[in-house]
Length: 182
Image 1: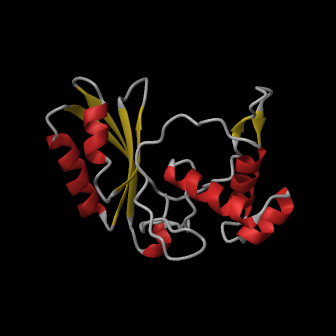
Image 2: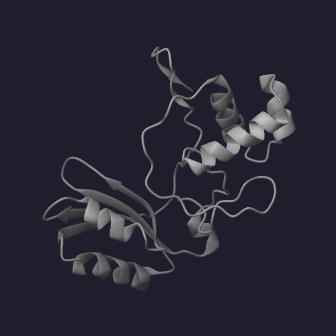
C-alpha cells in the first residue's frame, strides 16, 4: 500500500515514473547495499550523511542512487495507510486466466487503483492489490478485471484493517551467497 502519488527523489524535484516490472537484482556491492539500507531506515537521509557512513563521496552516492532508481531497484516514497487518507475499500483480488497471465498483469498494472500486481503460482495466476475510494469503486474495478477477455474468474479479499506493513526487509542475498542481509 504505497503512496498514491509518484515516487520522488529525496533531493531535487525530478519526478520518476511509476514503478513497473521489476527484474532480477543485478550484482549489488557494499555501497549499493549501504545506500539501500540507509534509505530503508530513513528515506530522508542526506546523500552527504550516507556517503560519510560508507566512506565514499557524495557524488558516488548520488550517481548510485540514480542508477538504483532507474533500474527500478529502489524507490523512495512516502508510505501511507490508505484508510487514513479516506480510501475506504482495499482488497487483494485473486485472478485466474485462460492463458499466460502476463497479458492480464500488464493491463491491470496500468490502472491507478492497482498498487501491487504479481504473477503467481498456485490457485491464482495473478494477485492484484487495489485501493479504492469506496466499495462502489471496488465493484467497478473488479468488474473491469472480470471483463478482460483472458480472465476466467476472480476472488476478492476485502481488507478490514491494516495490521502490519513493512518495507525494511533488507537488501537481499549477499554476493558471497551466505544468506539474507536484514
